[in-house]
Length: 102
Ligand SMILES: [Zn+2]
Image (cartoon, rainbow, N blue to C red; front, side, top):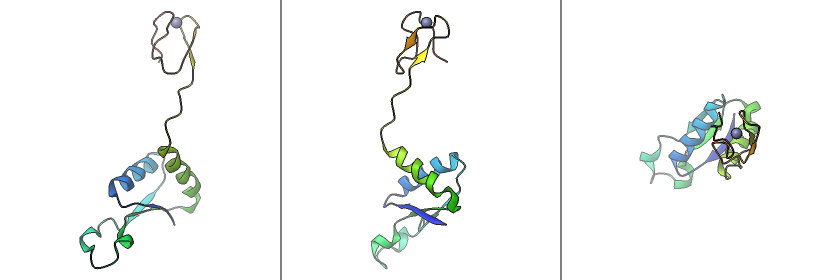
């Protein structure tokens, strides 16, 4: 098992956990329920932590987490199935004939 990230926000941790789970990567959260004892031990030690269960998944999990932070990459251009016109990725319909991109 390897630790992926820790965050003061359980919401962030849950977001990453969902992301990885949707990719079939098994994770678990440590310190998820320790909020109630903040004050008894130093705060930084009770941040929720996201761990990957299988070390072999670590690199991929790391990439997914890093990838989810950066801006979405521009969509690839597509060719209209109806008239063959090349369209920019951000257009949902062909500029030439109006056919919607599947
Ligand atoms: Zn078209």
